[in-house]
Image (tube, rainbow, N blue to C red; front, top):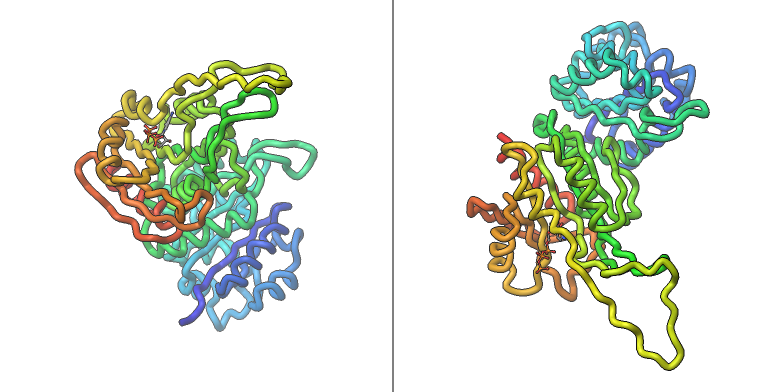
Length: 400
Ligand code: CTP
């Protein structure tokens, strides 16, 4: 089998050096990569670097190797085009269909999926001209990854950073795996909760759980690769921020509720993958709880936490909003799952069987997705990403 062909477009921004890492990831995972820099990109990283790392020739203009008609061939033969970093100028030229260099020609001839990873100063990103260009590219089916927030070229910080190259690679991998299918969540805002809440007892102790957040992160990554705007409400996770995803960090169930409700106000779907503590300590000791000589410990009194899933299901922020819950069950899995689905009032419930062998933090999972309309979709043992794709298939079908 021949290697999937990827065109890596690089435009002229300081983040061009990060594209070397993306190129490495792509070639090392078995992709044939052709780098097409813009002339300005070569001010930041030279052609020799791109050529040596990709093992392919590098040019910026349509006038090199004209007999091979590169301005048409490169785009036609590609399985994926990814532009990282995509500057405001490159986004504008792509949105307007200009064809004044090899990269823009390639973008016009490509019929494969296209991913843009913009990087620029916050003002340029927020400018209505850029926002309209991004909206145009998304409407035409491109995946435009939201820039990350953080340190920019100078001393300033804000939105506009190129996401981590490893995370852009993850977007590319998923978009390639989906082949020619359109990004079916484009224009949608989805909220995913992930991880496990911690309920503090005193300044050093908490009641928590073993959730790693991997399933929620897999849901966020797959939704972004399917074109959605994603808010990930992450409770106590230690995983890298997925590219293009707005991450809101929370600690407790009460904080998670607040963040989910706020993000859900304009969301098309809410997926509650977080393990939310059902109870919290009734009181919080502002000083460390000390043991007392010869005395048994005081019992810990607990109070109920709000049930976020039940609340978002009962008070849908907009008509047609799709709500998904997760349930971990040990026995009588399907019957318990059905009862929980009815009790929570959500549209879909992903039911995992947990047991001795099925540990939290694993890379793989197995589940059944129950639907309020009676549907039942088994998801065989496999990566958490496969379960995530099935969840979004079912959500996308309900969004219409
Ligand atoms: N959930 C929530 N708020 C809570 C507790 C749970 O939103 N306070 C959500 C989880 O994110 C998950 C689903 O509800 O989507 C899982 O519920 P679970 O805790 O298993 O259900 P319970 O109603 O607590 O049932 P059980 O009796 O099995 O504990």
